[in-house]
Length: 255
View: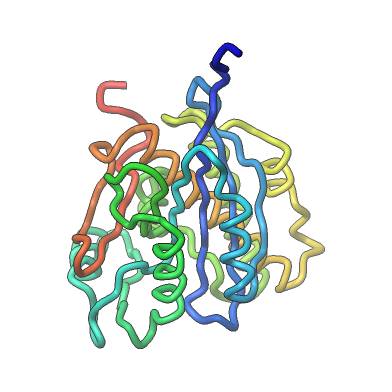
């Protein structure tokens, strides 16, 4: 039989991973078409350790997968901060990005999830071939992709203020990424996320929206790495002591 020329997109997964197992996490699945146009396929609210790993296994796909995590994945220091946390703060302090204090004590849950994924065959090296898991930091990503002076803070403050932050975040997600490179096209899953009713939402529902929006931005970062290449990303830190990968800009130089 003739060989199929059908385009097969890798899967781009975003995971807004809780730092403690008692808290919920958010997941997002994104794919690209043959022209590099991205579509959000689904989002999910995830609870237990097993839920997270099961969701990742189900959505991994057969044609490659990159998982971008909004939480630490390489943590070797028992106390204090990782060198990349210090570097990140030095660069983004003027933008009021929250300072990271990552160590084995306070980041044991994401570290455990990361190690489980590495046992499943996900490589933490962004430049590797095949399935990868990468660490990103959404507050810094907002500065770069949404072109903000300071990040929109989700998951903080009274419910009314959190609703306002969700409304602004999803407005910018659509506005800024629609004409970015790669572009994020409207899809049923994205439409459901950005039109979800806020006034009637209680605190738990707002929390789910916050996590799924964060996960969507993570999935976009995973796609950005694949479609634009590592050279278009900012890489802070190293593979030994920990790193953070960020999409450097919405558009290529000269575009």
